[in-house]
Image 1: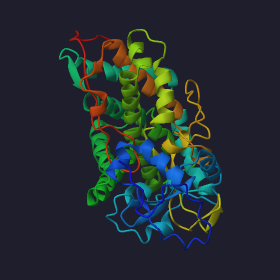
Image 2 (image 1 turned 180 degrees about the vertical axis):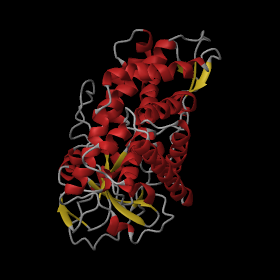
Image 3 (image 1 turned 45 degrees about the vertical axis):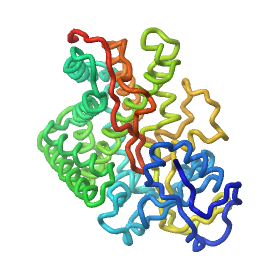
Image 4 (image 1 turned 90 degrees about the vertical axis):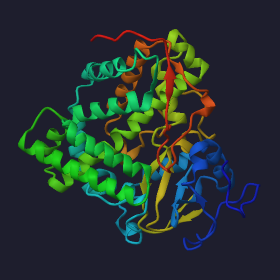
Amino acid sequence: MFSPPHDAQSTVLPLVHGSPQSTDGPRIPFYADEIAQEPHRAYREMRRRYGALVPVELAPGVPATLVVGYHTAVRILNDPEHFPADSRIWQRDIPRDCPVLPLLEWRPSAVRNSGSVHARYRQATVAGVGGVDLFSIHSRVERIAVPLINAFCATGSAELIGQYAFPLTFALLNDILGCPAEIGQRAAAGMAAMVEGTGADAGEGGATLEQAMADLVNLKRSNPGQDIVTRMVQDPANLDDEEMMHNVLSFYGAGIEPLQNLIVNALRLILTDERFAGGILGGSLSTRDAVDEVLFTDPPVANYAVSFPRQPVLIDGVWLPAHQPVMISLAACNNDPAIDTGAYTDNRAHLAWSIGAHTCPAKEVAYLVAQESIDQLLDALPELRLAVPAEELTWRSGPFQRALTALPVKFPESAPLTI
């Protein structure tokens, strides 16, 4: 269960006023496993005690401010001048084995830059994504999903993360990037180590991922194709090898774990909520409704959109210190009582894709892939059910993602599919 700092009061506290230097009070250990297991309870407690801006530690000895208020988050995300993404000054004092460093350290990529530099990197990224034929997503997903389903459909049971969601998103991302399987496997292993945040292993994972991306860029310069990386290489932004490597790397950061977890979290909702559980065999709510709701209630990237103010900033009566992370809790802000109406169908007011200059450039592709992946599975196995009680499902630890450890299911044994 989430516990506030030992000297926090049970009543609502006034917002902290004063200088940025008065930030040495108790901080919530945001890396604690109990927060990962019951995040929404934790967000409610944080908001009750601190308002929209919460003092946290992302890792032991790594202070940050967590934004849990929707309107405050919108102001910050739309103000890159005061809240830039550049982390170079911050990381000077961060140990190399810090578990959150690989996901927050500066890179020559769109995600960690602002202004004209960010615009140049984003131009190449948008050009790469813009060439993806959205009408091809159905056939691409089907081509990957059917063999995966056939591998377990006759057994009557499966674990949908390892046997379906991960290999599907992994193969689909490699397909649209133009990445051969061997390079993609190294990229996936590196990204998994980074997201899990296990000390030195996270740093090694980052190095593995970077080398895989460098190999992919070199391949596309010599052997271009009809894919995202080729279009980025050929874009007039003229990114060099290092810039290309880091910007392509961002696709793996955003395209494997988050997309996999969007699929899994939506499947969990469908299988555990009566509004959707009946929908497998003809209920009133659709896969699209489930994806929309999950993007509000359990977005796969629960906390990110990190910025580093260049100078102390006063916001909502609180001084935020310079060069200290300000992280948006996308999940908490989406569920802020100030804006949460409980109506999620066709409601895109959530922050799951972020907003402003750093809005996810591939959200249309990701949305279609998630919907098609779920539909392929449920069309093939319409009597799919959880293999364990819903309360026995557990969540992975870590401050960034909202991800189940496993999603075991059962269903009547079925004959293999054909395309």
